[in-house]
Length: 348
Image 1 (spheres, helix red, strand yellow):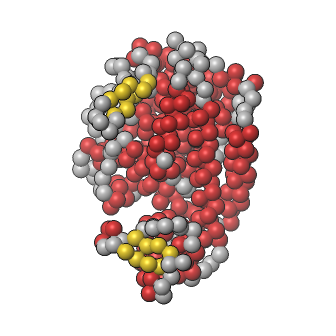
Image 2: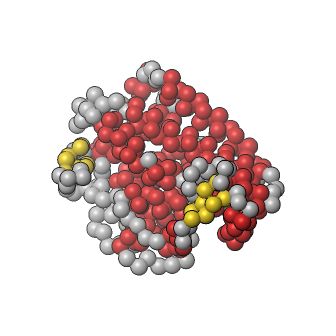
Image 3: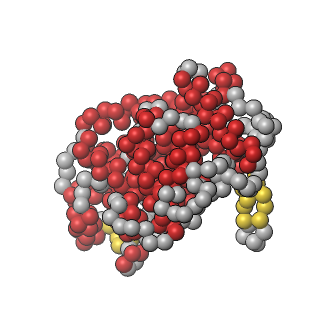
């Protein structure tokens, strides 16, 4: 079996791109701490929006979907799951809530990862919930002509428990001894987790939940306010491409995790930039129309009401709708489409 030794990373030389991303993220962490002290009440609204988006996007990546209304009801626990998809969505919500509330009390061990996986499937009758895989799984790609190719073969079931123990032990050791920068070791751990692919089902969603957990535990809280899962879903091809590049040679230890490290750090930094942008709109007390006007100036091309809702968490839906109507009437915005397909773009 592959040998996992994260200590080797402390002597590695990282390129200027990775070092620049790390420096930029730490700069944003300092800004966020200042913002949270200034306007904590308004920022609480961002948390609820991010929970809904994260639950929706992470499940949608795996083809698990429902309507936007049902997603909101499920995340806010105002409804009971009606079908398999909604049961899986409710399970993701439950794990995300635990991470939000108790991230500092969840050790990174196989036992706790299995418990989180069991909660992920707690609304379903899944005999493999909370258990490592019992059949060999494969990472395949389906091409436009319909043919399927195997991109990567994860570890065999009998190798999985030991490998999961090893990556947890190595992660805890280098983090505990401060041997390796957390922003380096987090994507390496997640990459190894995905290569092991420890479960029959739910590996992708568990990897994204673990990403959030590890970031929180190391002081990077942006995922609480800006959905990292939504950013991954919007650039799904880049996510899979970075994974594919990083997986080459993984079984014999000749893999290069740099593409996945760069991808994940770029996603985290983009989320921090989004956070800063949204904070700017609630920093100064403005009228509803001026807040929405400023939000629309941050959008290029067509956008929907929900896009503005994300940028203006301090405003009610009715206030946003009223402001959009006024901006259309004044000629600043152009509206097109009907019903759910209504979208807007700036006139100049």
